[in-house]
Amino acid sequence: MKKWLLSHQETMLADCIALCSIDSTLGEPPYTKDAPFGPGIRKALDCAFGIARRLGMQTLDCDGYVGHAETVGDYPKDAEPFYILTHLDIVPPGDNWTTPPFQPTVRSGNLYARGAIDNKAPTVAALYAAAAANATGKLKRPVRVVFGCDEETTWEGLAHYPHKMNEGFAPDAEFPVIYAEKGVLWLEISWDGRPDPFLTSFQGGERPNMVPDWAEAVTNGVTQTEKGISAHGSTPELGENAARKLAARLHSSTQKNTAAAFLCEILAKAGPDGAGLNIACEDEPSGPLTVNAGKAFLQDGHASVTLDIRYPVTADISNLMSNLRTALSKEAEINFEIKEISHKKPLYVPQDDPLVTTLTTIYNQHTKQNAAPISMGGATYARALTHGVAFGPLPPDCEGTAHQVDEYISLEQFYALAEIYAKAIATICGK
Image 1 (spheres, rainbow, N blue to C red):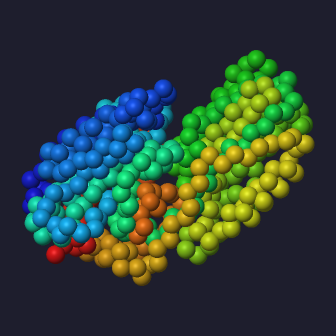
Image 2: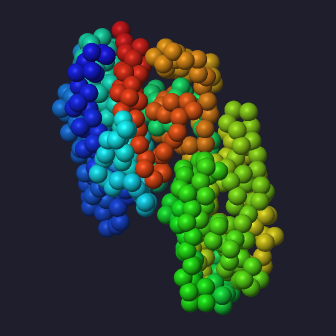
Image 3: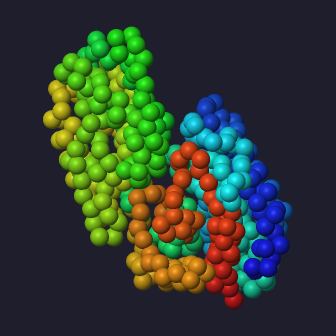
C-alpha cells in the first residue's frame, strides 16, 4: 500500500488542490433541485465524484444532499461496508489571508487554503487510502467514503442518505482517536425592547461555530468597529470575540432596560466557560462546558444573540436550559425567546472498545508514539455512525487552524494520513 501511495502522491496533491480551489460555503437561496446547499457545494461534490471514479470507485449521488464513493471488489454479498464520513462544505474564509483562500498555495511544506485541514485534504487522503487498500485484493468488505455537504451548518443532508451507517470513523478531528464528543447545542436568544438612543444597531459574527473576528455598531449615527481573532466554536478560549469586545466598550453608554443594554449584558455574560450564564459544568470523559457567542444582531429595538454551547457527555440538558433561563431573566425586565437552532447529542465510546484500541494502535505504530485516546468539544459525523469515532487528521499537540485565517495542512501530514487510513482499512476490513 505504501508503494502504491508513493506512486500517486503527485496526483493526490493535484486532486487536493483542485478540491480546495472551490468555494464550497453554504450558498444563498433559492437553491436548485440538485444543489440544495448552493452551487459551490455542488461543484465540490462533483469534483469528489470525479476523483473517486478515476480511482475505480462507484459513486452515489443523493440529489446533492450527500453522496458516497465505494470500493469495488469480490466481497461476500452480505459484507457490511466500512464507512469513512467526510464533508465538503466549509466555513466562510474571513479576511486578512496571506494568500487568497481559494487559490491553494504550497509554501514552506504546507498547503494553505480554506478547507485544507477541515475537511478536504482528509477527504482526498481517505479516497486514496481506500483505493490503495482495495488494490491489495485482500479486503473482505467494501469501503464507503461518504461526502457530507452541510456538516458546518444543519446536518440536514445525512437524513437523505438511504443506508444505515454502522462501523467507521470520521477524519475530522485529532489523533489518535476521539472517544468522546460533547453535545452541541445552538440557541438563538431574541427579543424586542425599547430602542436605545445611543446604540441603534449592532452586528457581529457569521456562524455560531466561529468566534467572531469582526463586529460593528452605530452609535449616535457614527459607525464603530472592532476586530478579534477567529477560532473554532468548540475552543472559544483560543480566539478573541470581537462582538463581546465591542459590546463591553459600549455597554456603559446604553440606557437600562433597552434592547441594546440587554444585548451588551448577554454578551458580557457569554464567556467561554459558561459561568456568567450559570451553566458551567464538566465531567471526566469530556471535560468542561464551553460557550461561543457566535452571532449578535441589533436594529433599533429588535435584537438576537446566537450561542454555540458544547456540553459534557453526562450533563443534564434540561438543567442547563433551566439555569440559562434563570440567568437571563435576572438581567433585565425584557421578554425574550430562546429558540433551538440545532442540537447534536454527545458521542461516547469506551476507551477499551475494539475500534478505539485498534485505531489507537495503528496510529501509534505508524508514528512510534504512545498517545492515548482523547475527548473534545467538536462535533463530527462520527455521531451519525452506530459504532464510530473520530480519527485524525490533526496530530496530538499540533497547531489546529480549522476555521481560522491561513488554514493549512502540512504536506508531510497529508501523505501520512493516506498511509494511516490505508493501514486502518486493511486491518479492519482485511481477510
